[in-house]
Length: 113
Length: 114
Image (cartoon, rainbow over all chains, first blue to last red; front, side, top):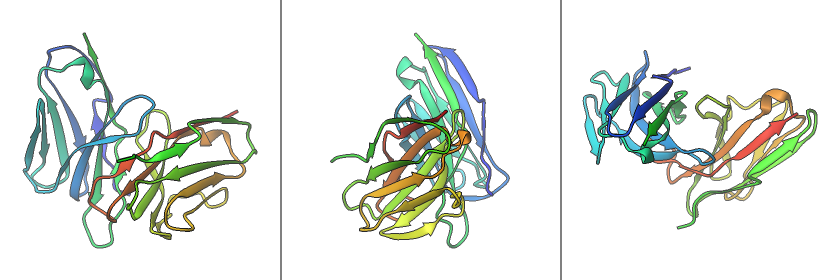
């Protein structure tokens, strides 16, 4: 079983602050996805990273895939209340016949106005 | 484009009762997934279909859970009999391809087993 550890588990910050959340594993993934889930809804894909060392930016969100493709980070600049939600990372294990996404437990972010 | 539809949105049952959930994926999506999300955890894959065939059901508790996708479109997930630990949100997702692509999730069914 490929495990993804996310940290911190909970994060409460003031509007305008910066934050970084982490997704770590001892296993190698062929790709890694970040989702955001709001209460009462299903997760929504934010980004997919596939290359070791890759950095992707989505407005105020910056995603990085580790060089060894075992870890990833999500950095939010100048957080806004609309960023509140559960941030989930999900990895697709490397290797032939690997179709199952493994999800971390998530980081629950609250941005206080 | 319509999203993934699920029903019911909420269900409360007593332990040992049966329950069924329904999912209609996005039109044209060949791959359908059922996930279980227990409070405070990430989604755990229960079963994955490619058209009407099962790709992976290794984490499905087959003594009480069953799922089908007979015509390769919509799907049902059944629990019989339910246990207290089955209380969770059951998420259905669909995607165009088998792996490495975006999964589109439905809103989920919140099941409470008393």
